[in-house]
Amino acid sequence: MRTGQAVGVVLVLLGFVTLYLLRDPLFRLIVFVFEFIGIVIGFILLLAGLALIFGRGIWGARTRY
Image (cartoon, rainbow, N blue to C red; front, side):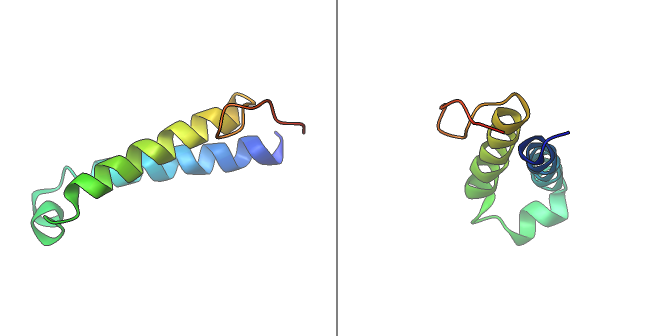
């Protein structure tokens, strides 16, 4: 596994954890103001991780590994 793919896997896991934590009612109550920002960050982490796993840079350019 290349370094970029390993980073991609970590980003995907972080994205899933972020989105999962937002499901918890107590956590949502604590961070009510940041809920929308948390959802956006979770999806950005997921997309960035998937982009790195499948060999594309975060901005869509082909990466060299």
